Image 1 (tube, rainbow, N blue to C red):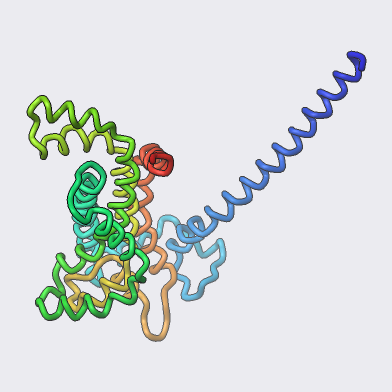
Image 2: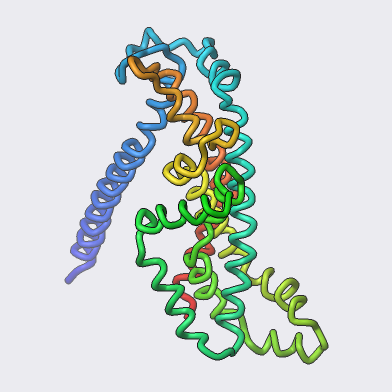
Length: 284
């Protein structure tokens, strides 16, 4: 094979990879457009007064903020927004604290029945939330905890965070913990100053998972709250619909407000989120 044939083969291979790359890029752009299109539609619709799901471009008035003004000044929407922020923030905090402590105990400590208890944790994830919703409602009712923030927060805590953090914690060296014990560091200080900084990426991932779950939860807040002052954002959004007609522009304005908070959170924590998911998947 002479040099001319080698150059032709290299050029043909380069052209082939170029075609493949262009095709892959086209698919990526198409997928991105499909993902972004609903959000663009939501934002454009929020500046209309349309009572149908369709609108014309001449109906869009970006200077008209009446839908957003109505959302924040009527139906207790602003109070519902504050409720969602409070419930979601507390859910993220308590879920990270409880899950990290439990994962630390399961992974780094020895106690009787540890594996059986962990398997019980795993088993709880196999039960759909809809199955346990009515029993939990009856328990909350008997304890007079309905229409309280406690009822809205406690249901978000589950075994998923424990399992996620334990997988990540397998990569924390035992020698590091033993060295801290030799230096006379108390158990809680080891957890607080040694373990927590090392598992920060997976904690960020758990915060995002918990935030999205709590922020978008609709069924449980609808069941556990009957006072308008305790409604969360998802329940308040459902009240923007009327019996005979629906102002889709108003509904999309409320949805846009609801979308902003998790979107901003993910933008700022995207790197840590991806790192936490990747490392928790390969550890152990």
